[in-house]
Length: 555
Image 1: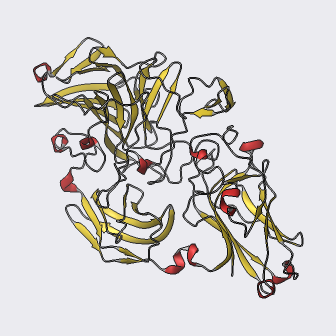
Image 2 (image 1 turned 90 degrees about the vertical axis):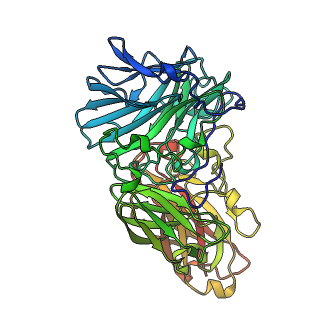
Image 3 (image 1 turned 135 degrees about the vertical axis):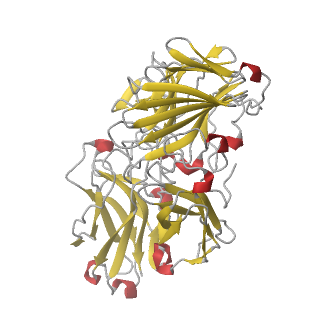
């Protein structure tokens, strides 16, 4: 299900099934609506959706303590419940019913959390209102019983008993690696995550992430499975690879959805889900559709048709994004909270334009065609040679695709060493997507120049997408000229290159190489050496490193 230009968020699905998903649709019928209601068993509020789902919420903690679908219990992982973070502890929990909606409200300090059920639906709608840092609430985890869904996907470590990094990256006996971090997907690439087996699908449908951080290209763990059971996540702010400050306020709804094995209903997807039934429930921080606005752009000119373009809105309070239509660049972002935002146009994942826009409740901010300045796209500069594409990602470089779902030590990875010769073709595929101080620093690039080119000074550019431990490139040309050590740009200060993410803050290093550095014999190769420098980092793949976007020598 691919995105369309008018939708406020990416709409591609993320279906991860233990077996081939049986054909099916979301169960939203009302055959058992007469049973809709709630009771109190002394320790929990028990909610019967009137369909085939009964769930329990602890009256003392707000934990989800039971998920019974078609008479089978699915909740329970290592003796723990499903909850915010690792559980809030003592909380004030209440329940109310308004017509065909039941709402469970949880208050813990400044945090408020909600579960809602609708008559005849096998769905649980959740909202989380985090006001400040006094309460840790950046994820919700649905803990699923072991044996309910078995798989051996990159984000599973059921069959990978050897720990190779921290306590969350594992190696199987065949040399393949597994980790809960290896989701493969950016936020904009999926609408839901879960499993399907035996005629049952269990899914978490993500929210629109307006109060999350990291933008459309952020990657984080989405699910995991081990011998103890499985976990499905809604993560709004995570302790790794964050490029933005944490946002606060109400996030949701996100949805726990059961089906007969098929995908959850597309009516639950972010950008599609409407909840007028929740307008009068009294949810803290809730803003109905009438209190939101819209931004629409007539088009974007100056685009490179070989790349997708994404338009994002962001300020300290909220974020939104959507795809620009490939034919003309038209875009529309709806459901936006009032405020002033920075609008950014991305070519691939590379920002090529920014401006400021204001959004008012009930209004539409219409923008004339955005003309992208040619100078904003580094790919428009004339180059003697270029390795990679200026698109904000290491796509096309050696091992780039694998690194979104495997550790660099994975048996499937091609050698991280090896030099590159310009002019023979395949330079990008031969150049490693990541460089580390302790692994492949000192990589050599061979190239020839004409007499006219060798007689002039040139600028060499290295674009990076992120860095670990302040790793940055220093260059040497022909062993006669060495650049200064550049200052490190601002990047996330956590693991990235080993846990499935190249996403950081795109940065371009520029080096002014004097004519005296080049070889005057045009039959000889010039030799560029790229070293990774930093006084930080550990060893091996946790040494200082960086991810490459593109490298070129300008004419």
